[in-house]
Length: 163
Image 1 (cartoon, rainbow, N blue to C red):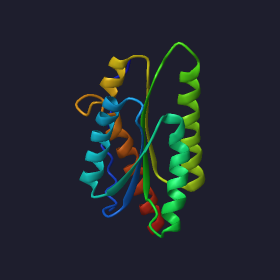
Image 2 (cartoon, one colour):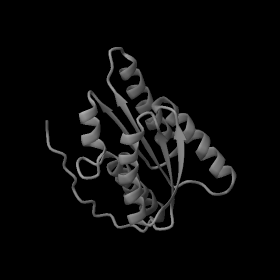
Image 3 (spheres, rainbow, N blue to C red):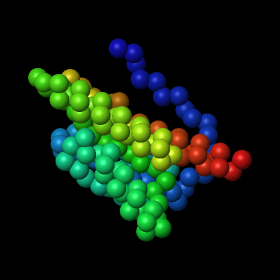
Image 4 (cartoon, helix red, strand yellow):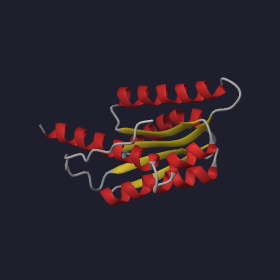
């Protein structure tokens, strides 16, 4: 397996004061705590405030994102970025493939259709050990990665809006 590579992004467009939404699936509480730790740390470091919505599983994340985006816009307080966090562990049936692929597809559809910066931190793994390696901030930090992806896309969106 290739080592993770995080090239530093040079775009320093100001995004302080932006609002982010984290939608998390609390199917595996302990792993979710680790994913949240990484994501929240990145948002705080970038100067963003955030709200958290919790759903039962990864398949519910895209619908919750759509509902929350509409509600926030309706209140005149739209979200500037979204982070999706969850964990899907392979089992003995094709349910793993359905959940992982359909949640990812729906999130990509939302990001493109709504032009919303979105970081997908739904980890898909074969074992609990793989989940922990991906979730912990001291290891692969996939929660932090999802937040960094959303922040990078938000910087691009803001920079291009100025030109």
